[in-house]
Amino acid sequence: MKPQELDRFEIRFSGLGGQGIITLGKIMGQGLALGHGYNVTQTQSYGPEARGGSSKCDLVISSGRISYPKAESLDLLVALSQEACNAYYPYLKPGGALVIETELVGQQPTNRFLGLPFTALARDKVGVAQAMNTVVLGALSFLLPFVQQAIMRKTLETVLPAKIRAVNVKAFNLGHRLAKKEWGDDAGEVWRVEEGFGDD
Image (tube, rainbow, N blue to C red; front, top):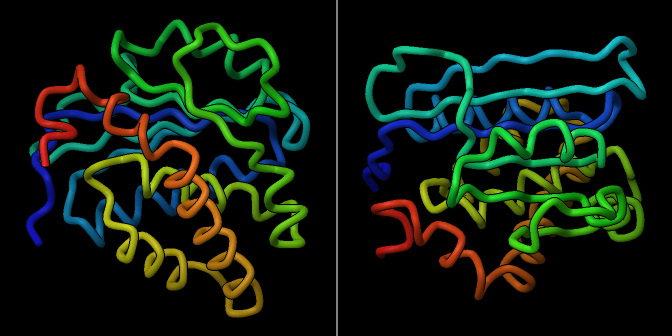
């Protein structure tokens, strides 16, 4: 299956240190580059503290050459803390999608967002709160029309150590399933402004 043509698509994962933001970006970037065949650049930054400080990871994805590696006009903002949502929402382009952690982002800057209680889902349904980032990865594998779920799950299995593989695959599947259930009707609408998305 030929990957969908992408001119340039920018994603920012943002939240707090300790939420696995960088790992989330790395796994998705690797899945899109090696698994799907896209060109991908990744940049990241940490706040003053590794845990508790702010953390962000950007991906730029394109079928062609990427002339500028940094994300400036976001197509997708994943905000897993209130601070991250407040700081980075202004960079989201008109028609871009906002995905939030609903228990940690209580004040949304817009009523046009998609959210799930990712941390509670990882803790209560998977039994490991740290697998929250993998729940997010599963949800995004449903939301993004150019991501193939099976390829992204395979990347996850390849990257992770054997001892935490099973729990993270469970978290990934949970995220995908719940996004489909909760966002299914809205997911196509999210990309209606993006030419070429949601047409199939």
